[in-house]
Length: 113
Length: 112
Image 1 (cartoon, rainbow over the protein chains, first blue to last red):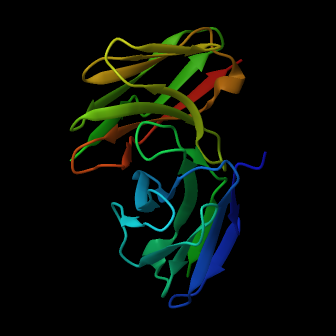
Image 2: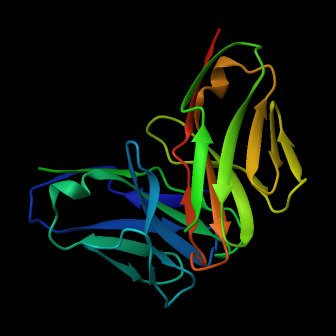
């Protein structure tokens, strides 16, 4: 099983450029999440989707937008990248939002110059 | 606001030297406490879920326990392959409904 697949694995952007990070899961999970991980800050939730057709802001949503395309796919878009968005981004999914473990992808390492 | 604090930040052990990692938390209505392992350059890998005080879970050399204020990850006779960052996270049921809050992690290094 592939689990949670993220693309791309690495990306360098110039300030002001836009891009979309893709995430797909094949575990028939209902809930999906986007996190960023920064040194000394731990994992912080950007957005989540409790179920297909719904999305909600997490702890650090500014500068990002998301789309729950279908049950399998959840994308994260940076409309105008800033150096502060340099980070490692993780997509995760879980069967339910409450009380069930989340499974993570391998991450996308994004550098904004 | 939910908070998770892990200690120590880093731990160096000799192979076979047992120890414990601590995860202290404050949360409104705990719905679950999760332990993850993260290897360099990889995403977190799920280890355990604990739901209520007194609960314990075991997997190979790892044992996780939970009280009302903290969780411990006990590592018995560790091996070099146990070296990783161990993350603790809580799922609250209050205003943070549906949101996992992670600690900073403990970097474990096991020397042969």
